[in-house]
Amino acid sequence: MELTVLAVPGCPNAPVLEQRLAEALVGRPGVTVQRRVIADLPEAARWEMHGSPTLLVNGHDLFAAPGAAPAVACRLYRGQDGRLEGAPTVKALCQVLEQADG
Image 1: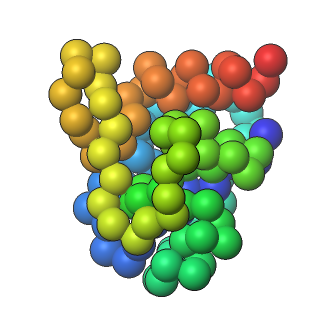
Image 2 (image 1 turned 90 degrees about the horizontal axis):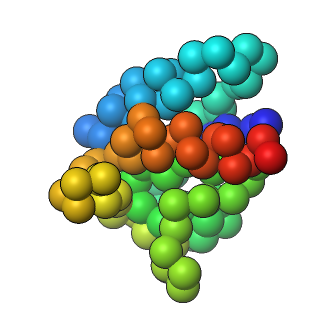
């Protein structure tokens, strides 16, 4: 499984995603995470980044809303309680990783 974290320079939510992703990866040895800094809209379009931070799983953004446009802006994720957060929850990340394994 290939994981890539995409973020704009200085994104305050990228470390939050990284921490939650580390928790979700406990018990999954051998999974590596690549990181890419995305500086402009053409690069965001090329990498299919739909806001910062974005997690690509095997090259796909499994959290993207249908029809979402590439963006170099802050991204918000809906938590289990309906509130908006700057990164997916650990539970949501675990679900996405399980989907990708299956």
